[in-house]
Structure formats: C-alpha cells, structure tokens
Length: 154
Image 1 (cartoon, rainbow, N blue to C red):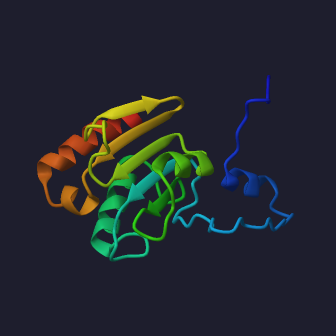
Image 2: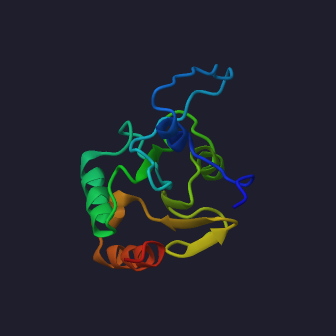
C-alpha cells in the first residue's frame, strides 16, 4: 500500500492527534476558513447568504432535510457561506478541506450548467439554485433530488 499520495483534511488530522495541540501562525491576509459542520465525509456545501453567518433559518432547515434524505448530517459536511468575508474560490476551499463532493447552492458558475454533476479530477461538483429558491419550487426539488441520488447512492 503506497501512502505517498495520501491527503488528509484538517479535520482528519485533528482526529488523529486529539491529545496534541500545535498552533500554527496564520499568514497575514489569510484568515482561517470558517465553516459549520464536522466535514467527516469531505462534502463541501457552498451557499451565498449575505443576511446570515452561515445560512438563514428556513434555508438551513431545508438543508437539514436534504441531508437527512441522503443519509447524511452536519457531521458529514462543511457548510461555507461565500458571502461572509473572503473564503476564496470553490476550488481553493475544496482543496483546503479535502472535499471530494462540492454542492454549490449559488446559481450557475461560468461553464457549469445547473443540476448537472461535473467531475474535475477527483472532485464532483453540483451547481444548483439557492436553497431558498429550491425549497419553494417543487420542480427544482425534483431536479436536485435526481442529482443527489447520483452523488450519494444508498
């Protein structure tokens, strides 16, 4: 077994070294990434909600129901609000957290159609409408669920 290509997320490293604490200096101009969840399964959820620290109550409740339907929880994911501070690009955030699956609830990115899973390297991306919009429209819920079944087969 070759371990040279093994990459661990910050969460995984913290779980390996629960009794040791090392404080590394943060580079100037590079604040630590703030996310909600434990990132246990390296699933990154990106949202843009300028009215909340992470996500508004109604959208958060809808997200929890979506995660539950996929047999996931907040322990499985890292939720990052792109509207708070300057967290970086989806690619840089995914690299920092070691994410394999990235769900972007912010509308389309250039060259990435909505509700279509795109694989780039070892990562799968799904771009969708904002959660607040999906939660209100039945057809969008159906499109999202169709993609989630592909990303997270039971």
